[in-house]
Image 1 (spheres, rainbow, N blue to C red):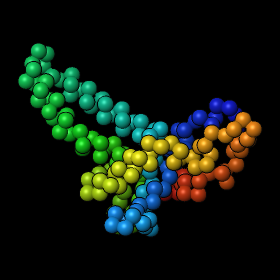
Image 2: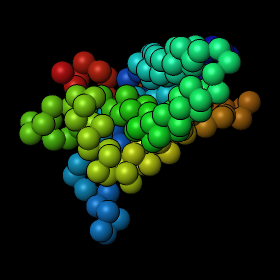
Image 3: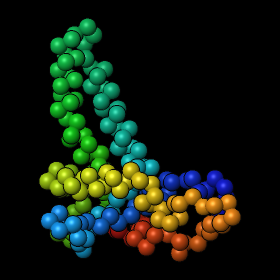
Image 4: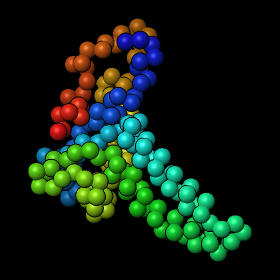
Length: 165
């Protein structure tokens, strides 16, 4: 592995990692999981840009020198903020363990996360930590250590997108 390759995160973020779900009553891991992509993934970056673009478009639509219109749009944006957060987090989920019961669509994920905010929080925390997508390989090695590019070093729960089809 070259010196700069260890800093490249996009490929691993695009691949996704299984996030085990815990029972909210017991805190114990269940058989259920979500396959989440990282914040450095193409899809996550695209969703973020689309959200920002829509927000800028709304702000640009405010008539100049109209404080009431500005206040109204600001209030709308504040009221929609929790919805935008859930939408953003939902964009990181690309599969789930109950796909045979319900398709893993953006709409279904958003509905699930609205009713399971603890799961949305877990996804947010998990994806915020890039190490989640690299396992032991993400830890900075000492100069005397040599990292390999052997695929057996990848985390066991990491799944290539083609495996989810």
